[in-house]
Length: 303
Image (cartoon, rainbow, N blue to C red):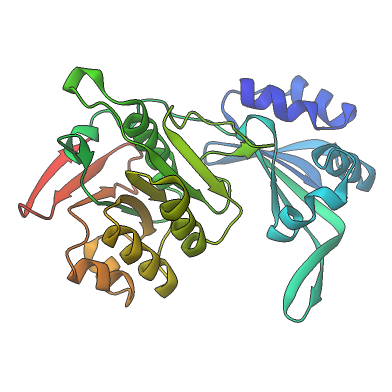
């Protein structure tokens, strides 16, 4: 409930009152669309409430999200979302202002999507030992189609690697997190809103390749963690990190290894045998996964 309670603080009183009167368990999203009914996402179901959202509701909520300083949040607004307290995120759409092919602002905000943050502490516990190699980790790629929990399990693996795992004698590693879109650590004014462990350093709001190189140069991490790799520049930066003696754990979209191998850039990493473990999440059943041991050619079902 904590994430929802924080989000409610950012909503106008009239909207907050309606939601509190229609309180459901496990609200994942609250959508405010100008001149449209207020809607809630609960699991895979969308609840349409009778309350009609006004333009004033949207603007008041937007001002609260920006802490009455829209200019301070201009870059995040141009990215289409703002991270607020508790790691919750607010999606923003309206009329984009384009200059030289780049979005420089969004005017006439028409819709806001408040996404309730929920950590799943311990969701990687059953698979983490497959990723540990002595006092370090195996280079690992986590794959699944969108929306199957790649970022959630990555975050919990980072927490485990950073804190150490006493029961197996793993002391913990320094982890550098590349959080380009703010979804892993959910930094708010320099403070991680998610539990990412005690030995973790974060760079957010920076392109992944540049951030990976900066972490290697400035923080000497044992492990680099990064979400949704796939471009040529990503691959070059990973090569740079691996050649510097840094281990890595990454995620990418794909339903299986064959699909990843069809990506012309990721296939380069597979062909170089960079990855020693691939964790494939089950799109039908969240929380189920298969860990492929590429160094042994065997598959172990976990989670």
